[in-house]
Length: 209
Image (cartoon, rainbow, N blue to C red):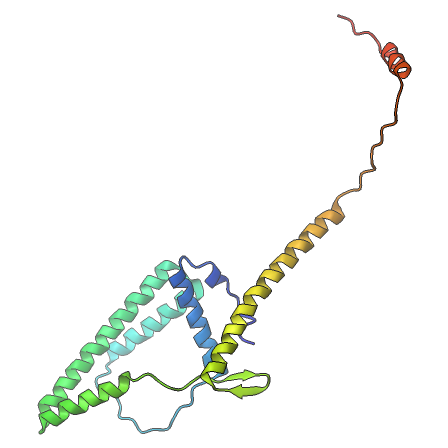
């Protein structure tokens, strides 16, 4: 699977828990987008007229900063990405406020225009109820509970497997060290007698003072 072959060094080596979670969330979202691409409905939506060239360039700069941070995981790159995102969001908010003001001011029925804008914002803020689909044992599952249980099981098992693999590698290294260690014959001492000790002492040469 995509997650099993992913290198998680950027997550493990992150500066803090928040950075690790952001990197992990980005990797998980990318894997879900590849494995379970969202279905695009062919709905005729009106183009966003307030989206200008400057906001387009700011969006591109933010995406570049996000990609850099996902690769490096550095704190400095994260700060750059966060600042780019804030600037881009503030720009879109200002453009949308200006566009809403223009719609109200140019409308013949200003009260109706205000309520239309309120209803549009309310529908946009409603959370999506769609659940990503997963292929589990050659069966496509879109039940939120089953998807959550499968993801929880995977991440629980991957941690245990990683620990087991690390222990196995450590054991192999120790085994290699034992094989390379030369064998030393055991040293045995035999019992002796007082007579033998005296003979050894007398056989020693006297040192000159």
